[in-house]
Image (cartoon, rainbow, N blue to C red; front, side, top):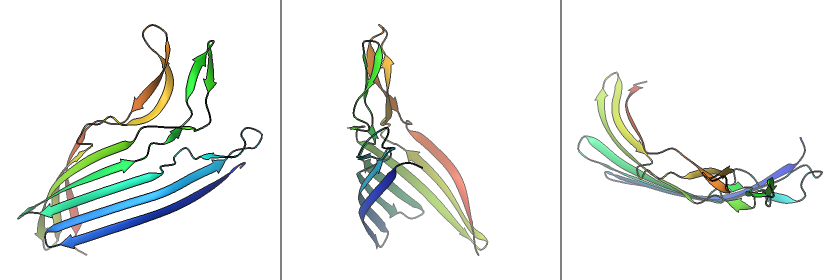
Length: 171
């Protein structure tokens, strides 16, 4: 394999349970770079999956029979190589020199647990991406209705609800 990589993370995690409340704060600062085959590219560049900043904030509250919770996720967009059309030829910019927009998502959850001697049953309702934000996952060169070139955003998943039943056996 030609090339090399370097990864430098630093993170903090704060977690707290107080009575019926739970809170979690997590932040990671990481720089992920790589070099490619020197015959193709020279020097270090951001790795394709580099996410410099990653912030997670989660919390929940236990009600009488239900636990309600939420999670906020903020993540730096991944690097990508910008492309444009010049004289009917695709011209690439600096390799992985541009970044996608900030990714953010809010997830919600409600669950109810029934404790039995043989195990627990947990009924849950999850809503992922509750804000229905269509985060940009990638970009590609495309064309509008008139044949003019433009960068098109490839969007991520919309709001996704889940309903389920989980069995946790007593062991």
